[in-house]
Length: 140
Image (cartoon, rainbow, N blue to C red; front, side, top):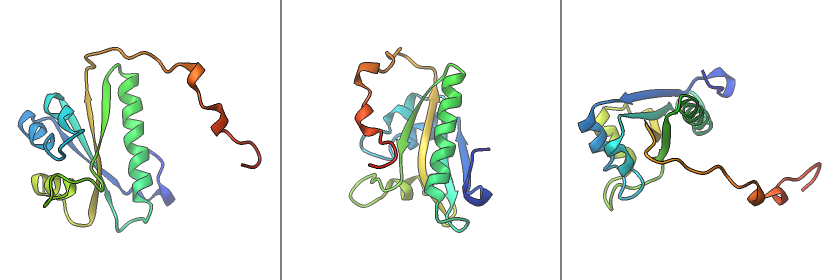
């Protein structure tokens, strides 16, 4: 239960575990979505746009909380952007996924969270590279 504007709970989720469907979803964009083809799990984050004008924020919060929970469970995750992305010259990523999963028109597709076991260990961020200058106190 992630926070939402006015508790509108605009988000809904389509959980995909079928390997063939994950391979199809991996083709939703020319770049950046291929990770889905080898993932054991993909969660399509959608939102009912008739419930709130801040559905993007609501769905984004839900997606990132899923990613944090996956990390807490020792899993890896990757955000695959769908909103405002193209599959090809004639089809948006949204249209392609909507046709695969029968998503009704009132829902917008924000992204897909790919979840699985990481095949690499990444180093933590270097604290020396923190951009402290981007933090402003009181005024800009």
